[in-house]
Image (cartoon, rainbow, N blue to C red; front, side, top):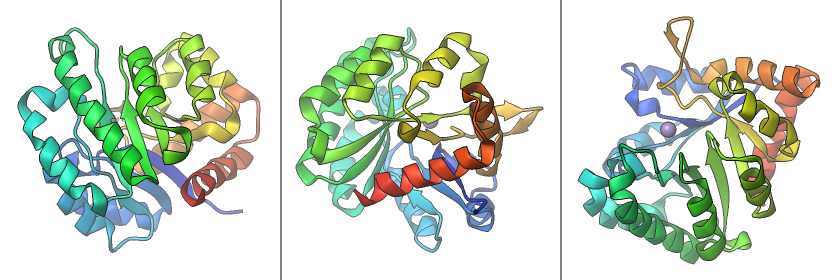
Length: 248
Ligand code: MN
């Protein structure tokens, strides 16, 4: 048995100690997906990640930044052949970003079709208040065998979760999600082999401290308790889920 962990959605480059944190992921054996919010940020992430065993950089264009950064889709498309991992991408339908939803959809369409055309991409997707539309677009533009989808911080309904499962999606779960009883009920029903863990750091704090990738051990404990299974068993299962996801 190992002590390896998985943090499959973390903004390492938004921490003040970015470089140290990358090394910390290796030291604690946390398989970490360093998501980015713009393609400009990807190069530095890729440089730092390339010397590690456990960190991988994902090429992103965050839906909340589309108004100011939509033109960066061209750089994103140019860099895509260099990156197996994609994220953070998706749609955000909350009031603050609703006005840009139509532009967000144009960009997300380009992202999904580019990923489907190249094949084999692993994509971390934001779907806050836009789950149905995100699933519609995945169904339409991302054929099942053309890439792997991970829904980050899923907040949809039970029927949306069932639909996502049918579409082959994975779910990266963070510890904040357990504070929502409705989400807990959904998390209980997701097939265990479709679950990964994440922090979405640095946007979550615990006891006044910013969450770090190694803290996914707390998420494991909460998830194990919720599902009534052994934590160590679950920890290994999640590492295995990631291995299968990456080798298929
Ligand atoms: Mn995020």
